Length: 449
Image 1 (cartoon, rainbow, N blue to C red):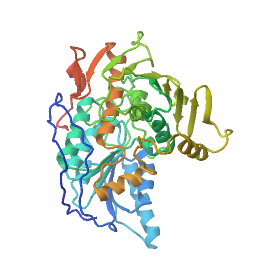
Image 2: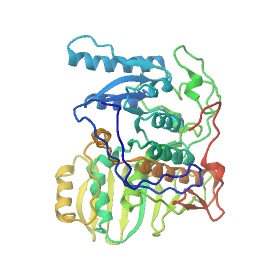
Image 3: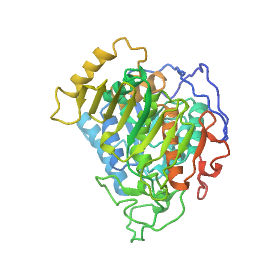
Image 4: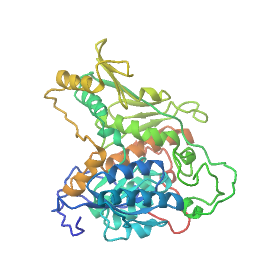
């Protein structure tokens, strides 16, 4: 794909760079002429289990993967082998056109890369995303978008300054059951909304893992990156190619526990159903037993609706209205109206199929609906289409940043036990609550966003 692009700005307002700066969240379109038959060239940073899934998905589309990056030699060489094997099958002969590096700076500096996919541990997301955006790349970055609220502000600013296309990996928005559930809510089908319950696990804990012997092939200092130096432990970075999600996410130095892991998915859907994508809560209320609690925190919106952190992960997201409820999770939905179940697909035993029930809901309750949400049938196709068209995708940067902000606000409740007033327009604490230092973290060495 050609790197020569001409952009126009339509109603764009640049945001200030400080943490207290207000953000005006645009729903604009950046347009540029592109060659529709050109392949989009891509580079991948972070090559664990999640990234290998992303890699295989993007390889099957109109793309050309030209570089991969990981601090573990085995993982990056395995990814290089996957890429070259894929293209060798297409060519019918040997193919050696994918570079492998341990330094993301080398990858984002390449002039021949259009888009960068980031699937590292959370503590690296913002630094790599800002570097890629500042280098003129479009970005697909895994959720939770950032490790802090200050980083969320920085990434939004980098997207706006550089006029890039940015997709957050909150792929539930590209699943029909979630869109249909949110359209039911947004169109008032279940009446006046009272509360939302989101089921996911608890907050992170400080890392206390013991030291283990290092093995060759891993750049441990670079894996730690901006975080304080600590001894190696394989729970944080399992060696080689593994088929599980490592538990670095459990520890506060590297992730936000299940609050930012699954919470980033379900709170994102809560925001969508509430119509709060360009806003957010105005208050966070911690549970009374915040020192030991694994759930119970509440986010309160200006409308008076509360979003409650529940432990019942299997329920996913449940919207409670005056006339009924909508429960939705991956591959599941239950819709009750005025005491009668209108649709129910929570297990394979339920009939008819999920697709059939969703189609019936749309026909009976959403035909001609006033609110029709962004329709994406595939999260990866949506991103690539927007790279070509310069439209903003279904989980554009503001959506990912504000979903992550909801997660971080909940975690403040479990960390500090304070009831917090929040200004979602300025993305800062209000009413004398909170501490501005919580919005950022110190970086080791020369790393910065």
